Amino acid sequence: MGKYLLFFVLLFSSLHIYSQCYQGYVVDEETNACLPFATVFVSQDCRTVTNAYGAFTLDTNLKGVAKISYVGYHELIIPLSRLNGIIKMKPYVVKLHEVTAYPIDVIIKRAMDQLLLEAKSYKNKESDFIYRQVTLNDRTCNEYIETFFNAKSEISLRKLSLITGRYATLKTGKDGDFSYCTNFFSLVQLGLFARKIKKNMPIPFLTSEYKKYYNIDYTILSGVNSNIYVITFKAKRNVKNVIIEGKLFIDGLDYRILKYEGHLRNSTLSYGKRKIPLTLSINTVYTNRRGFTEIESEELNGNYRHLGKDILINALIFNVGENKIERKKRIKYNYNLKEIISSMNYDSNFWRQHNEVRKTPLEKKVIELFESKNVFTNMR
Image (cartoon, rainbow, N blue to C red):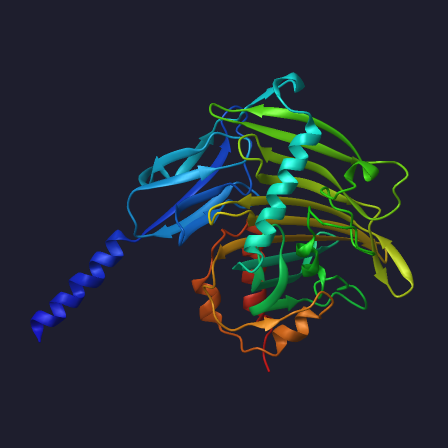
């Protein structure tokens, strides 16, 4: 009996010794500016992205190296032992237009052809995603929501299914807690590519008629082995529809979409018969790890004014991998997310075990406050 007991003590001790928590910051080598949503990759089941402050946490008992990648910067491959502390990345060099051998229209067409090919072959591929949303009401956080959902993941997110979730709302007076926590999640389904323009949906960068809606310009980022085309899409003045403006990053070798940074123009929220102007920015990073273009991470920042108050909404999505978590409930575009979450059992252990992306200082403070008040909800 004593031998078996000693064996298990040594076993668990060794697991404890070799399990390591790495914490670091990813920054620009030249400016020391933080690089939000840089990918830190050890294996398919061991990876994360930096948060809005360039910080990350990674728990693993693996040995070897980590790959640090950020669009427009040279990839780093470093030993895991160097993951702690500040990690500096070297940016690509900006070059003039004349460097490219092709007209920009040819580059856009090749990127669209690549997406069409992938959409046909990989349209049924799925991944699980973590979604976090913080709402500030005149700089006071009054709402937090966190969910895991499953979605079709190639090019843009589609057919969302809720796995589990939790939320907390602090009442701040009549209409004071007003926000779009219930359906703001739907904006993660905004895409950059569409075969045709759909009514009441924002016009994306890539359509067969993109010249009808956009003025195009570009620059080139030059690395050691490849270039990145950075194409700017600026909506024409006569466009009155809701439209996405911004920059699209395309790989110069195989014309894969790497990233887009954009914002909505002419966007409003409906509140009864009123239309409230909405400012929404989007930052999406893509991965080709499974052989096709799918979302790796996405950040949404929205703000609007309601009843004389500034409402700010920040949301983060991160691809945690293929079908890692069971239990799914299909959610449609206009569903009330709070009501669905409230119908589920709340498992506090689940949330302690799942921390795939390091929380920002604000998120930590908010969660500690809401947990101390016991206001997190998904109870029957």
